[in-house]
Structures are given as C-alpha cells and as structure tokens.
Length: 520
Image (tube, rainbow, N blue to C red; front, side):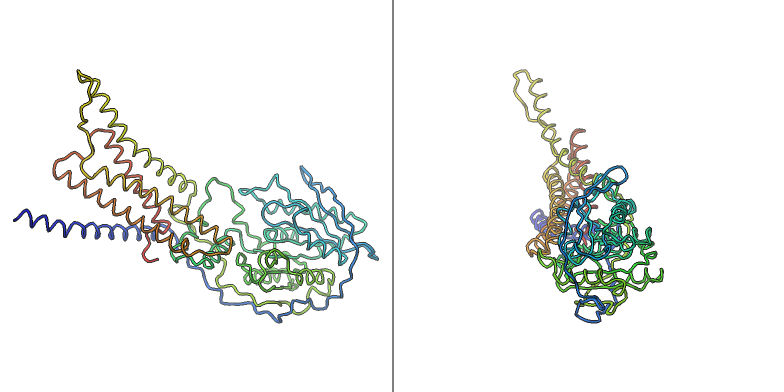
C-alpha cells in the first residue's frame, strides 16, 4: 500500500514539477533576454507638417514649352576610370540652356535603366540632362563612400559646363533615394551649383533610416509586438564581416552649407522614408546657411521613386520640370508645402547599441558553431558504442560481440537528444521566420499564418526545449542519487557536457532575440 501511495504521489507531483520548472526556466530566460539588450520604443512624431494646398502645381512657374530632343552617349572621365553617360539636349533653344546631372539611388545604375522619364521630361522642357552610369569599382554592399561618390558625380557637372549648349552658371543636381546623401555633399562643395532636387530622400543616417523602414514594414505586416525587439539588436550591432561604415554617415553638416534652392519630393505611400521628418530637417539645416528656399511636394499614394505601381506619377514630372525651368522665380514661390497630406507616426532616430551582443561576427559564429557542435556531439554516442562493440568482438575468443556495458543512464540520452535537436530546430525556425517576415515586409504584404502562426510555433518549440532541459536535469539528478553513472566513459561525458553547454548558449541567444519574452 505504501509503495502504491508513493507511485500515485509521483504521478501527481512529477508532471507539475516539470511544468513549474519549465515555466521558471522560461521566465528566467525572458528576464535575461530583456536585460541583455536594448528595447525598441520609437518616439512619436508630435509636430506634423501641414500642406498648404492639395494642388502640387508650382507657383509662378511659366508655361512649359516642348522641345525636340537629341540624345548621344558621352564618356565622363573620373579619377582612375571612366563611365558612360546619356546626354539629352533640347533643340531650338535661343541661348545656352540650364542643365542637370542625375545621381543614382542604391544598387547598380546605368543610363539605360534609370531616370528615363525624368530626364526626358526635363529635356523636352528645355533642360540639358546628363545621366551617367554609376561608378561600381568603388561601390559595394559593404563599402560606400558618399563624399567620394560626390566627387565622382562632380566630374559630370564639370563636363556639362564645358558644353556649348549649356549655361555653366545654371547647372543643378537631381538625386533620388540614396543619392540624397550625395547631392548635399556636391552642393556644399560647389556653391556655384544652381539648384538641388531631392526625390525620396532619406536625410537621416542610413542606420536610422533602416531601423525606421523596418519598423514601418513590420507594423504594416502586422507582426507580434515581440518581434520589434529584433530591430535595435540587429540594426544596432556591428554587421558581421566588417565594413558598412557608411551606415552612420550623417549628411547634416553638408545640408547646413547648402545655399541652393531645393525641391523635395515624396510619395505619401512611401513607408521606407521619414517623409515628414526629412523635409523638416532640411528646412532647419538650410536655414543655418541663410537659405529658406525649400519647396516640398507630396503625391498621393506614390511609393518610393514617386510611382504608383510601376508607373511614375505624371504630375510629378510636370511639376518638377516647371520648378526647374522657372528658377529663380520658383525657388521661393508659394505654396512651399503642397500636395497630399503626409503621415509619419514615429521619428527616425538613433538606434540603441546592444550592450552584450554588439559584435555581429561573434553572434554569427556563436550561432553557427553551437549548432554544428550540437550536431557533432550527437554522433559521439553511436560512434563510441560501435567502437566498444568492435573492441569486445576482437577480445572474445569466438569473435562474437558482447553487449557493451557503457551506456547513458536511463532517460539521459533521450532528453539530451531532445534538448540538442530542439534548440537547433528553434534556431533554424527563428532565422527562417525573420527572413520570411523580411520578404513579406519588402513586398508590402501580410500572411497571418506566417506572421502570427509561425511566431507562435517557434516560441512553442522553444518552450518544449526548456522542458527537455528540465527533464534532462531531473534524469541526471535521479540517476546520480541512485548511484547510476550518468555518462560512462570519457567520450559520453564530454559529448553530454558539450550538448548541455552549446544548448545553453543557444537558449541565451534565442532569449536575446525575443523568443522567450513574456507575452506575444
């Protein structure tokens, strides 16, 4: 009767103890993950930029006169290399014309694939346009020098000024997206530039813009709140492999030296750029140089590059051409801010730097090495078992194999395997989830099964891993109390220690990235 009562007590208390220990383990990991790195709490933008009228027309702009356009490919000599450029010259102008150099956004860029509509619209309106190929021998994902790139594009400005069809005192710059970090450098270094057009310009440093875009994309995708913790921890850390110094480039000092009239253009459907904060900062910066000639236009529903779908907004082309051809009268013409009312919920601001896992190389190596070590450790027991059988067979006179005496204690191998395999599956699942969310965000789409379902699944597996760790610990304690060797032989002992240590490291890393934080 006493034995039966103790068995019943074990059945009642065992599962509850495992459950309580698992909950405690999850709470400890949640607290540890919260303490190890920065949280994500962007500041709300409390000072909206109000448009003065819904019409985007440029005040005091003259009527556009259409010209025939002649195009030819020219060579621009740079320091150490050369690039090809498409030159478009309006025909029938009565004097040397105004001209503009186009500055590319991120990625590769050639005159065949970029700025066709913009350059053609300006050329038809009487402006000479030059679209050079982007210099790529000094440009890569890891290395970008915006000051050097400004010097390269300055050679295109110099080329335009030598042409008989161009008035050298009326050459300006058109920059899009990433080019918004380059054009202000050109304008500050060459005050004789006549004007600057900034389209979909980030204005804030690249790291801040990346965090801002990630926040907007994730909110649009509808991810659980816990995923946002990954923003400062991923964007704020040193990127694996080194390089990327340009992510902290601050164009502010150059904008504060811009004395040229500026036209800033955004689409209100562009969630990747701080469409309110950017113009406000440029206005403040240029005011320091005594320049109040900043004109801002917003186009309803337009995304990056002022497009709706695949098509550029026709009104943008007309307004941009009117502003450029109407200078200097259009530089300060009212309304200064017009078009669709922009909305920006949060500020793009400095990204908190992780205190613990700041080095991206360390994070990547830790994850990969720990997963590999766990997988290799899982092979130790079968290999050791095979070696023992082989040795025993050789030693027995009849050549038969006796059962090897060395085995893990009851329950240890099972829960160690569950711990190691489970934590690796959780890591792989989490990485897949982040990549899937990034894909959805970049495509401006959502998928409830992925966004919420997969996040719950990853966290559920993570909790089961903690339960496996608890059961492994209980098995070790129980066997030691009974005098049963937990891991006979040096190979098994080392393998078990490796699985436990590597799994513990991976659990801490998963906690850091939010898998174990409390709540959804």
